[in-house]
Length: 447
Image (tube, rainbow, N blue to C red; front, side):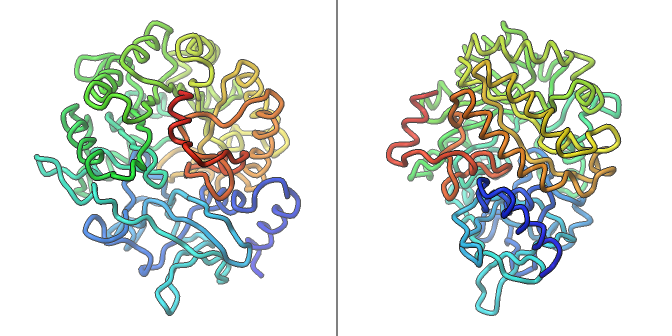
């Protein structure tokens, strides 16, 4: 048995309260997965939904370094089931790493599986090409380019501003490759619209609404880079908000509307609400005061950590605490050169942040850090954070929620191992399951 298998099994034994599915999922998210040519898609002309690169690269190499995976995209996500660990259905966002010990490949019968240290550990399912991806806008653009869906079709991800105005080494968040991702797609000749036209977004949503007859798409997220000045003559609240206004006027009540933006002053947050946004994600990125300054220099310069946190709390007066869900990037706490040296220290710091927000009724969520190689932290930490950190974070996260009597946040689909669809971390896989009947309607009503 290889060393990675031994490490994973040791952690499953040491932390039995963390679902075994989450252990594998976190390892795949933090370290990536390799793809045999037999497991790649035929891009938008095939039967498998391809990776859309919806905001960041979420890869452990640049496009030229990915080999055939840069020409034939891997699937957007994979589902793990069965195998020697009897895994329940687990949706995992694809992060490509040609040197990963995990590999997706087809066996002699053409059935895809996940292999670790050469041993098949799970069956792999891939998302079928949705019918709405087979149709183009009137200008020829693809739905996948304008309004891709992730989380197994649950979420429409509208990155309406593909770059960030925090620019350069003195402003960019040190783990974020949004600006490089824009550059690499343009260099490769791929379509990658910088600022998406409102009418294009509405046309793409009309196609999704027409062909998504099962109503699998339940929410949309409006997001993009930070705006420190204006885009198309609009400040940040007005820029992102005017998309929400147009969507809600054209499709009232069809989807749960979410926006990921900076922590803005209360009056700006109220504009989001007035435009029809239902859930607000003012991401706080990393809790520790020193690390926030070092890893988020633009946010520290323009807003500052203390003011950022104050604005998050103030936004609960507008949206209600349940509908304010800030994200943090799990793992950068341990990134060299400034991060914590031990898992104990990192978990203590992150838990302090969780307790700060959850004691105020606000439930953060997190994205598992992928060390993209074009970022300063990715270059310095190609292995990311230790898997033990991620497993203990899941344990601390659920315990803190229990301490304050909170349940899974709205807008993320069903919680529970075997049922969660949130694909970029395992926090939803690690929470208690809810009843399935009428769940989408109940979630929308809660929002």
